[in-house]
Structure formats: C-alpha cells, structure tokens
Image (spheres, rainbow, N blue to C red):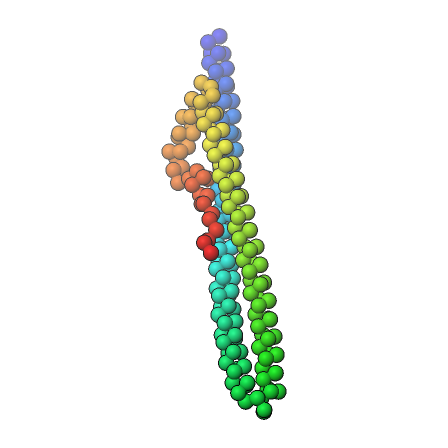
Length: 186
C-alpha cells in the first residue's frame, strides 16, 4: 500500500513537473516574441530616424539653394534693369526661369515639410507601440510573479524558474530590450 502511495505521489510530481515545464516554455516563448517585436520596433525607429535625417538634410539644402536663387534673381534683376534697352527681352526670360525655379523649389519644400510631418507621426505611432509593448511585458512579469506566489505547489515552480535563470543568465527580460523611442528635436 505504501508503494502504491509513493507511485501515486511520483506520478503526481511528474504531472506537475510536466505542467510547470509547459508553462515555463510558453512564458519563455512569449518573452522571446516580445523581445523580437521590440527589436523590430527599434529597427523601424532607426530606419525612420535615418529617413528623417536625410529628409531634413535635403530640406536644408533646398532651402539654401532657394536663398541662393533668390539672391541671384535679385542681382540679375538689378543688372538687367540697368541695361534696359537691349536687355528687356533677356530680362523677361531670366525672370520666367527664376520664377519657375522658385515655384519648383517652393513646391519641393512643401513636399519635404509634408514628409517631415508624416515621419513625425510615424515616430509617434512607434513610440505608442513601444509603450504598449512595455505594458505587455510588465503584464507578463506580473503574471509570473502571481504564479510564483499563489500556491504552495508554486514553490517547485519558483525553484525550477530559479534554476532556469541560473542556466540561462544570458537571456534578458524583454523589457530591457525595448528602448524608449523619442522623436528627435526639430
């Protein structure tokens, strides 16, 4: 009879170990998924920052070129005005070219400003997603803590999880992999 009780106890412990192992595997998988998603969000943030920096540099370049064109236009206008008799036709041509270039660059600047606004909106969305992901990770931690302290059987879980942490210290919690995404100052 004692042997039968021992076998039942062993079977019970085996079943409990299998259940806890399955739970640990699922939780670890969720943490890994959260970490991978955090890395994807970080990569997207870096890509958007690079695009933003490129757009800003192009915007500055176009703005400087527009200023140079305005200055050249002003100089051209005053020179042609002095030579009014033979330069009126030529002046008209230069004015038209300058006006069309100015309109082109102004359009380009407006387009760049719209792209900057869109990039800022995307950065804001990425930041919100990062905050959501951080909350998910925090929720997972809370669930793990609750599972560890909810019943005496969880003592075995705590020991098992402590052993897992000893065996794989190189696995960081997903929350440490998620960085705070801040839009760059303009």
